[in-house]
Amino acid sequence: MALKGNLRDFSVTQLLNLIHLAHKTGALKVKGETTANAYFREGKLAYAHMDNEPDDLATILYRDKKITRAQYRTLKSRAGHLNDKALGLLLINAGYLTQEDILASVQSHYLSTMQRLFAWAEGLFVFDAHAAPPNGKILTKIGLGNLIIEGARRLREWEKLQDEIPNLDMALKFTERPGTDLRKLNLSVEEWRVVSYINPRNTIRQIARATKMTDLEIRRIVYSLLQAGLVELVRPEGQTVPKPIHTALEGKSKEEQKSLVNRLIARIRGL
Amino acid sequence: MQTVKIVVTGPFNSGKSAFIQSVSEIDVVSTERKITSEAEKIKNTTTVAMDFGRITVDEDLVLYLFGTPGQRRFDFMWEILSEGMLGFIVMVDSTRPETFREARSILETFRAYAPTPYVVAANKQDLEDAWDVEDMRIALRLPDNVKILPCVATDKESVKKVLLELLFSILEEVEKNSSQ
Ligand SMILES: Nc1nc2c(ncn2[C@@H]2O[C@H](COP(=O)(O)OP(=O)(O)OP(=O)(O)O)[C@@H](O)[C@H]2O)c(=O)[nH]1
Ligand SMILES: [Mg+2]
Image 1 (cartoon, rainbow over the protein chains, first blue to last red):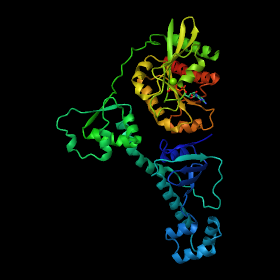
Image 2 (cartoon, chains in turn brown, orange):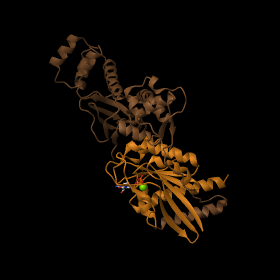
Image 3 (tube, each protein chain N blue to C red):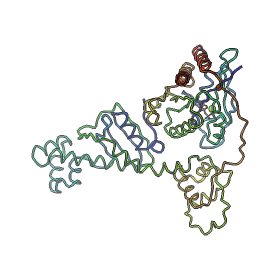
Image 4 (spheres, helix red, strand yellow):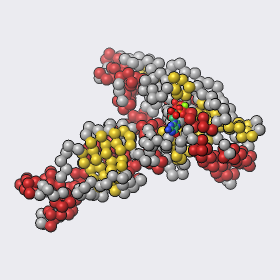
């Protein structure tokens, strides 16, 4: 079964939460600004990499100041053919670094890669439960709890806006409050664009479409206009409420209710 | 003659009309309209008022299935539709994670109307892109005691299963209340 979608709709934090809770094993690939790859084993982060970024062990250790520039050069020229696992072993056996040193550097590199992924608002992702772990790479077992908390913090703005403006099918109208002079307000270009569409007939969603804004962008602006007391939310004009429909199960004894549900069950079974 | 109803709700295009159509003995009475707004033009028609289907149980009992309109601009009708319902079904298109958030919000809204049992139908499970049911449970933040069922709304047997699971939950609820 596929586990794919767009970060726009299902964020990195939500993905990590899913992988974490379902103890998933497999490879996550996200195509956004560049391509990000991560590998998980039983819900833990084993590997993370952004395309176009060097992630060989020598570079990771040098960046983490675990080896000197001279050592880095030597390793690159003499041990360039070794994969990370082999190089790690060599360094440990030669007494240069401990296993803990190496793991710590690798872990912090993977974590920082994932943290950068949080900034992506868009990107197609696919999780492949059958993919093999990356070859020759040092694999970690980083619990996702902290990453998820960090991601959730960033998500909060979005969720708050979602709470403030849950329904984009509402319309906006200017408040009739005296003293709010539009011309005296310091509106941004984006805000002006939205303001120009304000009309009880236009839903927020339609305004977003007309101004080519994402849900997040339009919510931000509507929120600031609401905060400024400039506009209020109203039901779009031209809707009428139809007559209610009455059905009832109330006023029956439990036995009658049971018999009724059982009759329904029998009927559906027989369909 | 007694009538009871079950409400079928869910995001735009999730398969509510198809679900009702699969088991209704009458052609679904719906008010389909040609879609005019650009963004929602992934199909030609949408349900603007509501669908309803009918299943005659016996001489004096009829079950109606009411489908809610797909677009949120009609959600003022939800409360009215949910009045007196036996339970409700939230249809979710398993291939469109972009609609999960909305499905959750619809679910919460309906739960607030009435404390009736409900189940979630992970629809379009026949499609290759369908998310796994248990992954959807997590994505939709459903507690373990809420049923989420794989569904293919165009397949009558599959629809029957979902309806039966809801009815079982309703029966459990009746029994629970009577033992108090
Ligand atoms: N493959 C597949 N297609 C389905 C399934 N259920 C519905 N569809 C298709 O999905 C599309 C939407 O189905 P509808 O039943 O119109 O959905 P709806 O929820 O009533 O849509 P609105 O009333 O516009 O909200 C149609 O093209 C259906 O044929 C399913 O289980 N599998
Ligand atoms: Mg419909």
